[in-house]
Image 1 (cartoon, one colour):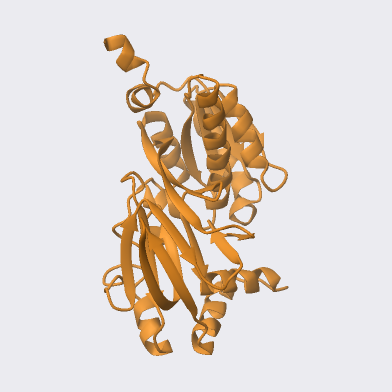
Image 2 (cartoon, helix red, strand yellow):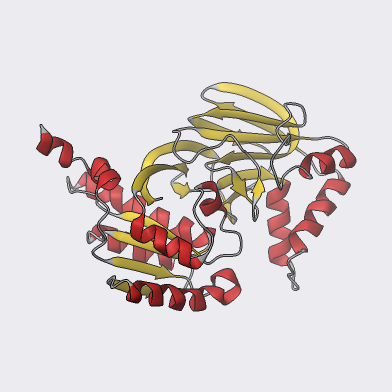
Length: 317
């Protein structure tokens, strides 16, 4: 009986956290190029603690997914993401896809994920209540315990922060098309969309129940925080086995801006009038918009069919 318990992969990840080897996937372009320097500081801390590690640098889009996939298939014990939410997104996809392959082959899945904050927003780390300083985050990896957390599957792609439709997609599209991008570009484009009165007719299915509404954003979230520290859905938890849905309904610009002004703290943002919150395990969002924003990346020709993928990642917390 005891041996059967010890053979359970998830229970292993919960209770056995000895670090024999760390594989660090470093996105040198994350955090506006800061990640490369941050990685060197992490290496120094690991060396000082006599921890064995191997760095793997990404060189192109989706490269982190490839690296994580191959490491997981080869039985890597701990993969460390050194980057931002985009890097975590790619690594999570690699780990989960490899896990599915291992399960098909009847092999054990042993890989844990650890995080170093080297991006601009680090929203998933905020949602997981992980430290945002390099030293504290590295020490947490050395002393923390791995626990299973959820991901969300959207038409074959996995996400760890959010996916949405509405003006956020328009804003990302406009910012990406801009020749000059600044820290205020996103805010300026949001204001433009709000004052132009852009809106969408959403048909949302949550566990088979239909909701029709006109709004500016309809989002599915895994964690509470997005957009660089904004508390978009305070009730959301990364390990509750549920999808959280936020709908911001269409109102006049002043009312909308008052609602959005509550995002930094999250207090009073979900008011049940302009901003509504739902939860479920299977969510479909339909509207007349061809693109979906998944963890900050735009996807075309993808159905917004979101399903909870519970306990998919063993995260060191």
